[in-house]
Image 1 (cartoon, rainbow, N blue to C red):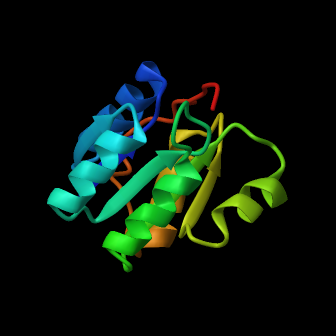
Image 2 (cartoon, rainbow, N blue to C red):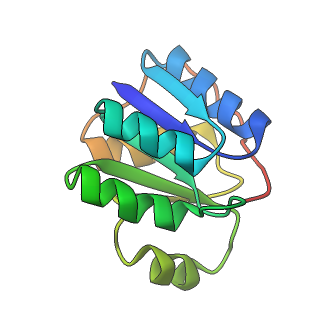
Image 3 (cartoon, rainbow, N blue to C red):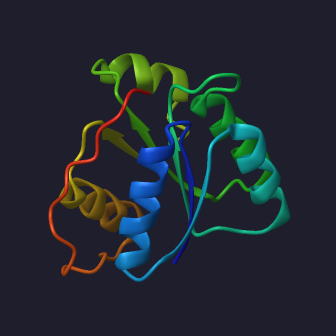
Length: 133
């Protein structure tokens, strides 16, 4: 599976991309919505994972732009906000999945499986991923 990871925190995006690669997926990680949107316009990804809160264009705005370019794109939103209703209000139901930071690898695998209809490799150990945004 070809996954685009969008997060302004370098350690988080690198960690998620590394875990996805270890699970057998191709992962590309970028730090801003503008770069992500350019990549989505250029070529398809099976899944986009984006942070909600980022400087400049927020993740929910990125989701709206992606939906215009690729209406069927699978998207998982990750956020440190604990108010799920606030996040859902801003994403207007435009995401296929939602993860709250910090999330474990098991949470990540389960959400990908739910959204995509298959599982990641079970050989990857549980590692908590945490961050700001």
